[in-house]
Image 1 (cartoon, rainbow, N blue to C red):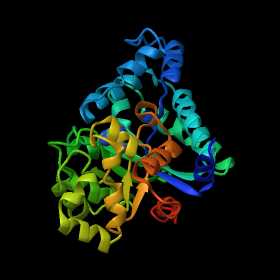
Image 2 (image 1 turned 180 degrees about the vertical axis):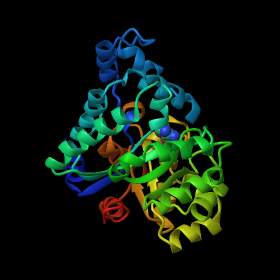
Image 3 (image 1 turned 60 degrees about the vertical axis):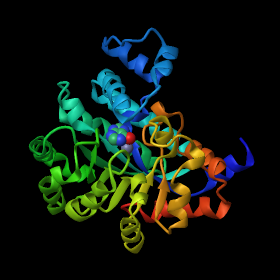
Image 4 (image 1 turned 90 degrees about the vertical axis):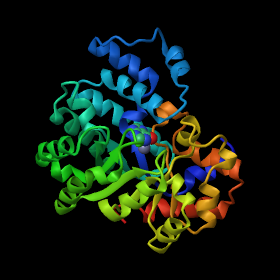
Length: 318
Ligand code: HPA
Ligand code: ZN
């Protein structure tokens, strides 16, 4: 470990943008596939790695949903999340607010109970090891708002396990406004609100997430920088942005980490945080994201401390 890696590891920090299903490593995909008799369209782990070459968000999502097919039992979800929490511990993370996609499991015939109980069991183990966690249930935006309401109702018995709801999946063509009513209902249940916006979608989607959904944080937010009025709003209200550098590179949201908008976000006084998104698919967990973006943008130690501090102040337990 280099000196910088060790210092990054030692920074107290939270991860606020991690899709737990996106932490499914190829090795575990194979193992669970065998355990459950699910055949994968790959001969070996190397073939899986080779398939992870994405031109955009949708190409990734297609493999992300296919990869999940091996998750069938409560123990599978528990093993998946345990493995991520162990990585988080190694990275020096003290707080994790993680996303999960129940609709992607329900539509494969997996009971909601299996998903919640498996993830919750892993979260309890993490707590014993000093990592506090919060579960954020995401609505898939390519489905309808009625589908999202259906999930919110079915999740009622698990309300106490949740800290919030989010919005993910295919962004273009699915503006936040489409989920205005279900977000209001979630807020009335006392849940915190976040939404992916401005990853591929226009600044208008970020405005909608803020003004029509009333979100507490924006996930990604890259394209917000195209609208100076929006930048002023994000700065004035210190709306946290959960930025994911390696994800942006792998999904061609940026051509090169050296031109990543995080530099401008910091210069503009925005409350940016660094996150891993789907680390098994994008080539690195949280510290690798810190390290690579620090090197690409020439971030100072003070800026790295600021980013880590932002993650703690943007977390829902602060
Ligand atoms: N964007 C949108 N939806 C997602 C992502 C992402 O990066 N990862 C998993 N679902
Ligand atoms: Zn994401």
